[in-house]
Amino acid sequence: MVQNYLDMLRVLGKQYNAKSLEKLDVSPNDKVKVDEFFARNFHDKPVIGLTPGVAESSKNRMWFEDRFAELADRLIDVSGCDVIIIDHKDNKEIVEKIISLMKREAINAMGIFSLKETFYLISKCNIFISNDTGPMHIAAAQGCRTIGLFGPNTPVLWAPYGEGNISIYKTVLQPAIQNDKGIFKDGDRNGYMGPITVDDVFEAVEKCLS
Image 1 (cartoon, rainbow, N blue to C red):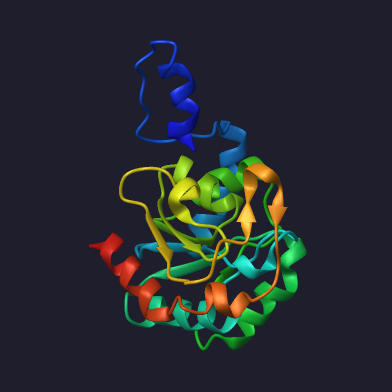
Image 2: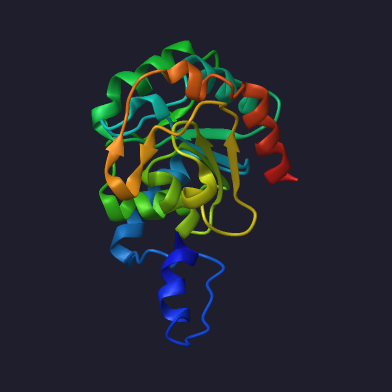
């Protein structure tokens, strides 16, 4: 989509390109609470951020809670990382289910921070893993290595933009989301997100860490 918008300039003879998104501005005041939070909870390990929920439209783009839990445990045990869950309070049940399924402990930052504080919080993660939703694009804009999980929407137009970011897309079903037409079909979550395994995402994280 970045390149699509830039094409509107190119037809006017403006040869401009952008290899990354513009970083979202955060004031020094927005950073204080987040820095204190990080100092209390994280030390020398890589920090992996997770956004497991999505907005109400097209819940079929949400990867499975048990797989997020298994992934988080593996990242802690095998990769030696810390895990933080960053999500909206509307997804409380999803986040709490993931935490209940985990054998290890993740830091739950759901609903703690303002929007701009969340921009900065995400920027402090080494890697960010998200369904196809807003925080995925925020992470890409903030320069965080981002792994996007796709199913009903393809990453062709909506991948996390920027070099080094990864999109995982394995469904064989036809896309159910057409953003430009406002079409958001729900259903068949397993058919869209089921093909993405914990191994797929874990291997993508290992690639980013290396």
